[in-house]
Image 1: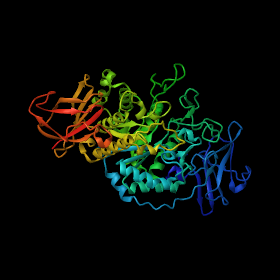
Image 2: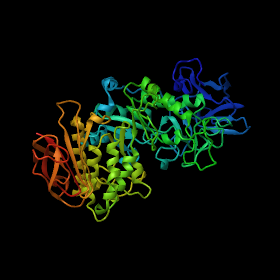
Image 3: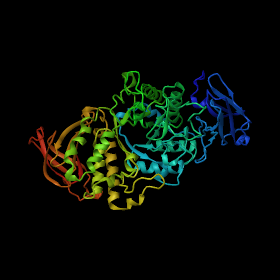
Image 4: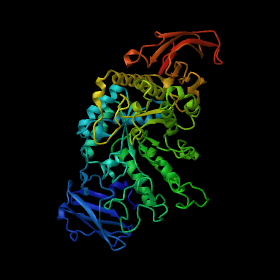
Length: 606
């Protein structure tokens, strides 16, 4: 499939219009015959046979085939059966449930983001603020296309001070209820919201407003729909031939055969395609753990170890390293983010030093521990406090993203708002959780709706409950989320050393009696003022609370999630505290504070 041509794969395969018609090329090395059928020949299978090249690529040119026409390949496989298949390299597809590929038009979009892309290439994402807003386009606001939603989404992201939008997969997918995670077209954006140039407009407009765009991308598995990649030429071509490795049992899908060079090339080309052709600022790579382990979700006796007798998938490791190197080489400044749910080492270590080469990885342990802790009644949290503190102690083990994603607000889990025990003030606790997330070392990701305290679980077929923002409690949560993101973006101590041990120092991790956690965030130089981040996870106001601080004198209260403007009860420190020379918590200075119930207080020296 590689061939001698240096052009990227999406310009060598698929349907490519030209002056003499459209050239169709498809890799099917074990097929007996391949014919292209479509609108241009009344779907007559005998009209346009393809010729086979020595590399297993079948090709032909059809003068009557023009952009916008639908087509499929009728492939008589090695097993003698005829199958009508969508084009793996199609750059457009019919609107589901229709399943044909569409001859794509060459882009006429005129990009306006040259400065953005040039500056991105020169930036270090690890030292910059990153507040990611995870969005499912169809349910953020219903009934909108890529162009319509571009302006509303940009206005909202700017107003809420998010720095990035992460889109749930918009690669074409046959079943909307999969949310895009069972991909049918690895080179086609879904027709549900428009065409490829409409999507380019969305990305370009977000860039014009200072918002980076990330895409959820799924290389671990693909669905079994008859018209897609499975048994493409009558043999397991994209999936494993080994029945012990062919399927992903969790999702009822096929697993890609990452040991096959053509499959690796296909997937890496898809990643580079999205970043280069659509100017994306990076990819969140889904389900990395399912790729790394041969025994992932497999019972004993249903998997085969590697040559060393262990469970690591060496082919996946090599693929992920090649993937990250290819994206970084082709798209300078684009970030690669792993969704990895285990303790696999060196995920964010460069490939040259033996790592996987990702820029960031999700810290799912942080998320699980925090939500379990917050879901307990306040009086019963002491025995889980060490788990919340653990993530702070190990915050620099990798370069992390702290996610509260769509997975945490579906399938009966509730939302941030409804996870809080009924005996507690839910709005206060949501503000507290968000403050802990934005203060904790690591980049931030928040699924849509959680920034204003969505109550109903998310569903892909209905819009967020925006009317909640008319309620004082939810309006206060949204304002707190805004102020936290703004403070995070404007304060180097809260982002510049996220993955560096110099950026964090404990004040108190052991006060389980009061359920208080306190720490310092520190900036990269003497000009960066430290931020003391104090969290009262109890349901009691704590008056006269003495806490050690690194400097004497006045400390300004720069954020208090119990403030009245957030819907809180207004308890606080009247804007400042004075640190004296009384030693406490192993420090020569300390201050007497008020820590409001179920609230966070941030202080900085004046």
